[in-house]
Image 1 (cartoon, rainbow, N blue to C red):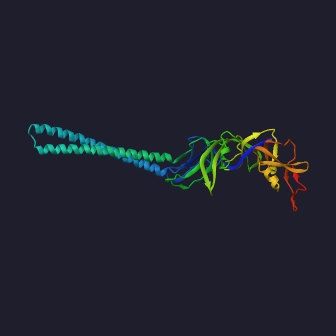
Image 2: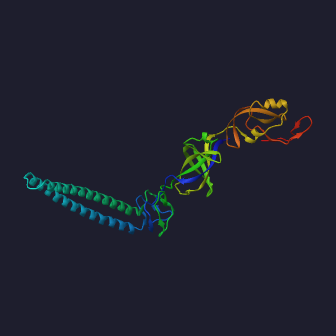
Image 3: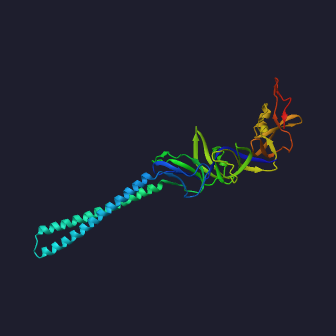
Length: 349
């Protein structure tokens, strides 16, 4: 028959790319233009924070900029006048028509005028930066979708106040493409060595218990996850979801196919677990290695075998003196006497 060796685990169905949309400014939600399951396009307006306070700040910044530019113009005019006065005083001083102190005063006034121009220029630059800052905040009142996708979560309502802080609040969650999903599952450390990228996967979800979905292992992550001293590793499985049956958050019961063999001789695992209460002679024979018990001429006989893969119910027989269809002992009713253990009715397979 056929044997499929698998590693089983449970996981969660998620969108491959999920984008959290937040806000960079605080305010009151004025309008919301999308809801759950709404398709959205990149750069689409999905919500609006009341822009009135931010518009007022922009207008105030524009007024401050006009005032700063006027002060700069005044300072530049004063500088021109101070420079002319200083140059005229130099000519008069060279002709000995004015005192040194008058020339020094004119030069000082000229230097002060230059400083005032520099200060006015700095003030203009500062108010321009403030205006850009408030204009940016005004743009942030428009909540824009950063990707094409579907809204899977909406965490705000009209009239709600949102506060931007070091941790940006999440207003919407957008899944970029629900036709491509992934399963994040944790595999025990004892099995992780068997998992490789590209392996086939079969899984079911509670919503469709009779449907077997298929996928492939796309990533085996190296970071350990330790919970109560149990170590597991995250295995990511890529899944196609063309009919959108799979929803984010569903629990998946996963079987990762490690190896598959066809037309092999299979032995029930119960036969491998069966142990006969032996005397000293059969104990020596039993210790030679793994094997099963068969009935030979009506007596239990131990046969050494070499096994291969297992699916949890059956194990592949690689080598051993057992024929296809031959019966093996899987259980017995034991009855002790003074001299031996009798097996009046062994269960055979």
